[in-house]
Structures are given as C-alpha cells and as structure tokens.
Length: 206
Image (spheres, rainbow, N blue to C red):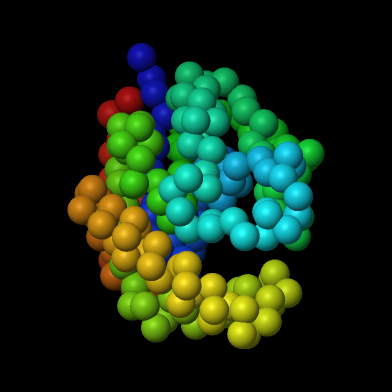
C-alpha cells in the first residue's frame, strides 16, 4: 500500500535546517506537507504568564511529541490534521490551528526530532544540519531581535544559560541517528540535490 515519505530535518537553532526544509518543499511543491516541531510546544495556558516566560524551549520536555506523533500517523494514513499554532508572546498554544491535507511527502523539521526514538521510527530519511556554533548564534540573534522583539542582552543570556547547554546535552548527541549530515545548511547544494534525488526514488518506488 502506498505510504507518504517522511523526511526529518534536524539541527541546532540557526543551523539552516529551515532553509533546507524550504528548499525541499519548493522542489516538490504540491506533493509536500511541512510540519515544524516548534508548532508542537506544550500548551501552557494553565500557568501564569510569569511561569510561562521561564520555559526552556530547547529541552525535550518542552514539546508535546505525543500530539506530534498522533498527527504524523494521521498524515501517514492520508488523513488531514489541524496543526497547532504557538504564540511566542503569550508563551502558550494559540487557539488557532492550521488545517493540513495529507501529501505524498512529509517534511518534519525541528531541533529535537532525532532525540525521540518514536519520531525516528516514523522517518524514512533522517537529516542533521551541522553548522558552526558562531554562525548559529549570529543567525539566532538576528532572528530573535528582528522577528521576536528580543533585546541583544536577552538573546545572549538565553544562549549562554539555555541554548548552548541544551545543544550540547540533547541536540548534538542526536546527530548520531542521522542518515545524512549536511554541513553549512542551505548553502550545501550538493547535499540538497542528493536529498531531492533520494526523495524522488522513494516516490517512484511506492
């Protein structure tokens, strides 16, 4: 029986994994559904805002992987889902959702998708985007200041106290589960071409 292909794209914050995922998305256009692990941060509406603001978003327990796995299994069975939306200003899940139709290619992107064995078992191709720490922190600074209204001081403090320790403890070790390690993220056209060809092969063999 035909089954969608699941490509997992992992890597540290600012590694370029989103760029890789988007380039793959562009290659297969109408055949792709994109799932970001960031959308599956746990609902924290039961907690006061002061507590929510202390959330460690780089720890495995920050994610509702149970819901993510449930949604992936639905998509694998060609059933639609309502993907959650996370509100970073309120530090909890929004009441909004995004309706997604099933497709032949599922791209799952996130910092810790290779850390959970249950998620790994659902993937056909596991990718880790490996980028130097100095490049990743600069990209994170630019994103958080421009897109999330953060101050430079807060970004640096979060990186040193949370992001870097969590990367070393959880994200970097998950690299050993990857089928393909891509240096320099979205700039590595050779690796992207290899992935595109591999996905095409999977689709043709279905």
